[in-house]
Image (cartoon, rainbow, N blue to C red; front, side, top):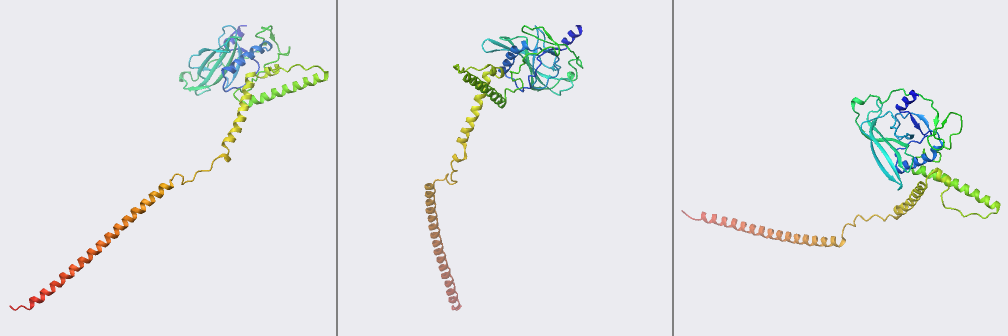
Length: 346
């Protein structure tokens, strides 16, 4: 008994035996769905004893922590204190969230990137059921003094304690191997399904709707064979559908699928190449009338310049002729003076 209590102090705890899958992100709504489904199925499923040690990114766990038990050691060292806050959900329920960041596994991680959030329904649910989600948060540098200091002693102890029911009429009853069935499980909950994946939700919805259609066809054939008056078909969700996926999730899936289909149709109609107008002419940026006006103006200016140039040429030609005439007269005058001087006797 002392050894078992020591193991509990080292982090041995009661875990839901089925895998809840890997979830990169977990919304508040999905956390509430998991906790409510766990509350419904836990009375028929015995929890098993085990350790939580260095969970990978996206790991989701459902634990049973009785009373005011502290959260068990998970093999991760966190470099900041854990924060707590509450969120009102559904009007009558209150979700308590504990969040801690900058965690690392000593001797394994080179940066403090691990983040842990744990949820429990403080009001409107079973407060001893704790949903734990490990994800990747902001990265911080590891304090050198804590780099290789282990958080717990390894190797972990091995215990073969029998599973035990944690709530309901069977609470406290141990279940030894091969002694009886272990309930129906949480197969009705899409544990391995990623709620952020529309493809997975559509596939689940199609499976559920197909199952409902087959069930209704069987009921109609049975009523037709017995000639009984068929009862009014109810529009409410059947038990099978509620066991597999929530009504809100189905509605959201239908909306997303129809929205994607209509978006594809309207996008093709709006942006199809056949509706694209022809490209404008490269000369459309010019004004023909304005260009013609400017052309006529330039022609007039050119003609004016040409006329002025012709006048200058005529004036220059006349001046050149006048200067040539004057030069000829001057040369003739010089010759006559020389002849006159030679005829004078001294």
